[in-house]
Image (cartoon, rainbow, N blue to C red; front, side, top):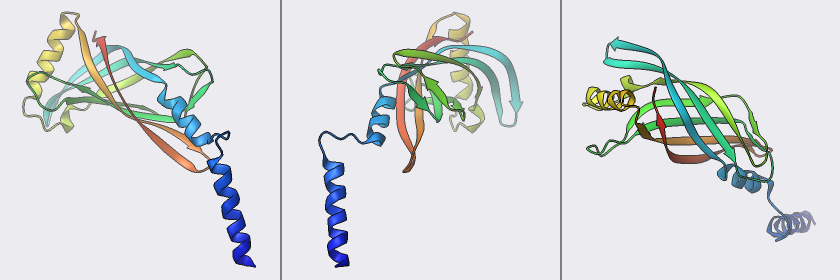
Length: 179
């Protein structure tokens, strides 16, 4: 008797989740977040220090981050965490410039964008790159010449559901001026 009841429940759940007219709310939210575009609009240098051990520069930026919601519904981002990279033509691996994130929930209305002002502090001291000074000089030269610099943003967007927390990997390239 117990086996028949369990079997009936199993069939019921399979029908519910396989229903073509039904939408899985977790997948729906994931798709909505994947449709959002994240980019850094500007990066202004606030402070420049030099760490003596390891001998590397430490740069503090104020960054304007834009989240563009291309969905026709409001999107809520519980948390995000990104690494900012710069690819140099002569190097195989991109140089990690910094990490940036938010622990606060961000709500972006439908078909709109939201700008956030965040702190970004370089992580050159964590780099194993032997030519870190050359890379920093190239970045500094581009900043002084007011050139657009191409960066890569790579990380995760996190959202909560009744089934727990989920992470969506996110990656994009963008150009901005460093002032």
